[in-house]
Length: 212
Image (cartoon, rainbow, N blue to C red):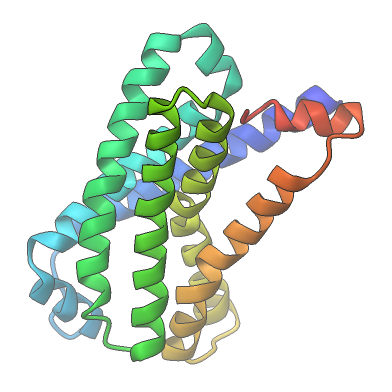
């Protein structure tokens, strides 16, 4: 039963990563709507939008591979190669995301929220690289887990927007302002609890082994 739960959770993560990455890619291919203020702002950002969406989607697709202990242990060389690709994607998507954040039209709050997200995403990933260079594998994995938590904030963002605006019908600017902070703060709090939670039981130890 426990094994089934762990695999179900993992495949749910895979499905979410593929779904959100596919949505991001389709956004780049869709015809622009000049009546949508978000599209106009994104167009003004130029290449940064394409970089952020494309490489952010690529980083999201790489998360399941980097999070899987089975993949890491069985295919070490592939894990390292995909890890390098993930770091490159975060660098390009994070920098371009920081550029896009400055043009957020819903006010200072979302601008600051997305800016902090981009800086933390870049910073956590850089700390993971530094730990790897120092051969501190335990810290490398912890910082990579934090980095991936921020990568998957793309999923949390769309869940909040879908529920707040699509299901409950709240005012979009208000939902967007809330999501600009909650999408990454929720992930960060949950992952910190996970990293600090003492594995006192077999369940906790086995659950943690999925990503460490």
